[in-house]
Image 1: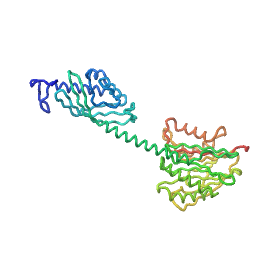
Image 2: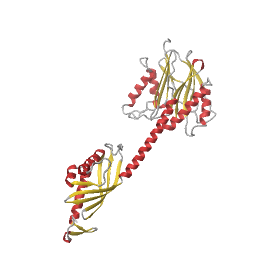
Image 3: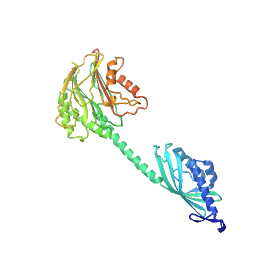
Image 4: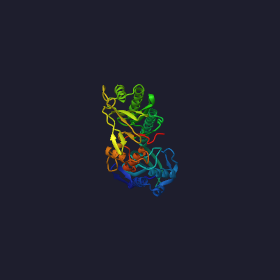
Length: 403
């Protein structure tokens, strides 16, 4: 058998008699594995026979020596910090059997359609190399890559399932939000909505009521993601149904609270500010269910619109204080969610209520109020900002002159 000498070439090793040729074969395989670890194509080309055969081709791998070396290059393009650890190596005749572990970080290109995510792969493998004429002529391999790929494929299928669910939740949420903004003579109504995730818990809505009145809603369901979006959709639908039969903001919140309490999880609730606008007189009646206080901008100052009330769905039997204000020409109201005031800059400073109030007070009529606030917000948080919570703005402004 090639690679095996006579008794005079045998020596006693840890596991019995080992021929000099077998030791040379093991050294050759060690050198080859080091070249694979380092992506050393010249050494691999030197040590692999021109008629080398890989009996364990990966999908898409070309056969032969060049295909093997190209596959190693693709591995190194996909993985960094490649480390081999030989745990055991046995030579028998012209074959060397190696048990080793490969660790590498998948942070380069996609590999086997798997997108890089920076995680470390830990692959166990058994390799059999046949040596002839001082070169490797054949390789057989068995490793745990298939198990890793199966896990990753399962994870990918799970992600796809979640994405499909998110798409359904997104459609539900989009259906809950108004398709268009009501056009009222002498008024400018401007909504802005940006969820922190694919879907969120913030919402706004408009209710076309009798006698030309308009209901305005801004709310926020606790949490983020799909659960918040589903609670938000439920609250939105209930408010809409109740508002059509009542002209009192306090009663609308009271009825909605009772219905919502019986239908949402005990650990969830909804904050909500509800107002009814008489567009002819400028009267704005409102009630608040634990939501951030809107600001009324008039005479260069920003005043809070206060009204007491507990969040919706938190406990039954709640009453909601109702108040009223008259908007004169040029005055406006900002409704918003806590995603605005709780945004942080790179130094972890919060945008905050005082900043919002001060910005409203200093705003002039050179542009829309919501555009001005958003410019200030994005300037404050800086580039690369990771939004922490849903952001909703709704501005209601009475024109300076009626057409």
